[in-house]
Image (cartoon, rainbow, N blue to C red):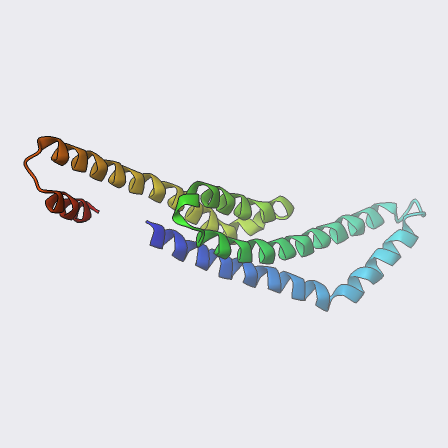
Length: 167
């Protein structure tokens, strides 16, 4: 299940970084037109006849700025999610929670981002449950080793060999 989580997170990170880069490049391509529209909107807001249109333009500019911020966070969270998925095995709870949070942060600015960050969120969920299964296997092996030693009928090398066979 850990391999599945790693694959999902890598796919999600590639999609996140790609979408974030696309949104940032689109913003940079049309930056001059956005600034010009903002200046025209601010100059038209004083007139009562054009105040409604000016308000619509302001809302559109705010939406574009939110997409730009979301693009920045998509890139940052995509890179951090790849780093997070490869944290040591004992930090799985922290890394799985971090993957879910890193998938949700860009959605604060634009819910459309959940389409690409869903892979990272699923990877975090899979990673969380992969740790629970591994713990069960280790607990079972420890119980088996304790029972074998308690029987007293096995040699020490046989017990160690059996423990490695369980893992």
